[in-house]
Length: 145
Figure 1 (cartoon, one colour):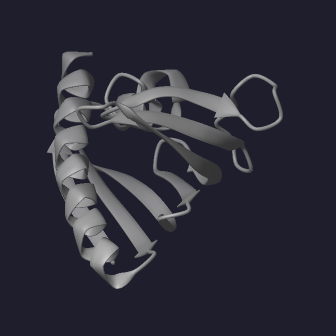
Figure 2 (spheres, helix red, strand yellow):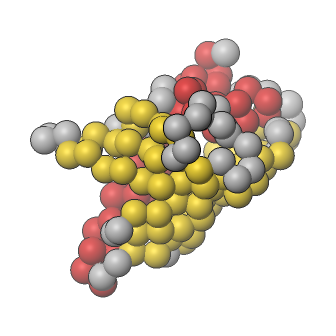
């Protein structure tokens, strides 16, 4: 399942890229994200090849989800991509940033595979909903900078 979303943000590409790629700043806008932990026990890195576990608390019961992540591309300020995996889903998430009329055009794309047909539809709908909510938070943060 492929999800694509385009936004125009009244902020510099460098500002938006920093919010997308800096693990500490991701905590400010990604819904339910409570920590990003390096797999090797070192400091969290955001460069190509960095492997982390993203820890989320979701739902009323604050269920804990641990998602493995690898940075595939980090070309400031134009392109950032990760590969994520979980027993219920996996996929590549790509962000492309361009400057248009002094603003940043952000195109996000998630190419996801879900385990099981019934689960796929539900998880795909939830991912689309959370992506829209996360983008709203990201835009507010970027434009406030």
